[in-house]
Image (cartoon, rainbow, N blue to C red; front, side, top):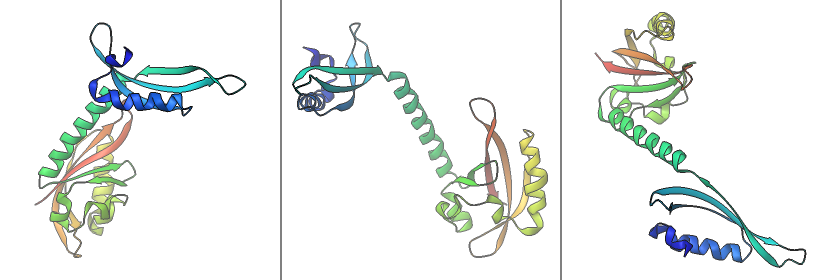
Length: 193
């Protein structure tokens, strides 16, 4: 029988989906399916009933596509992100991911210990807002342009804490590129000195 090709954990769910189609309710499901050669693939299938002019079911329409590669890539990405997040959350340095315009997309949890701000308070804001006014030209000017040229300068500057005081920090910033090689974001690592 066809259901023996399904991974055991999916059989009951897929059987319920088949019943739904028989009751004229279309479904879309994903399941692991064993191929003739014994290997497993992930299939996403959409099924619905085909009816004649009188509304009687005369058959079923099923379209399926192999999503194994897409699923494997998504899992690899999730695992990679989890590893980097674990690393970023395990160090005392402040890790910041920002758009090229300086808008913060991510701050590590260590930001709260070092500056008093939670990451949520800073994400979506201009990263240069934490810069002492006397250091802004150095950080947002020369150092920023060096990073855009592909350099990774080490810059010392004063950073605003939540209590209104400033601390001296040093920051390394690197330019990140997307899969096409186009500059995409900046990654900064900052530590209290």
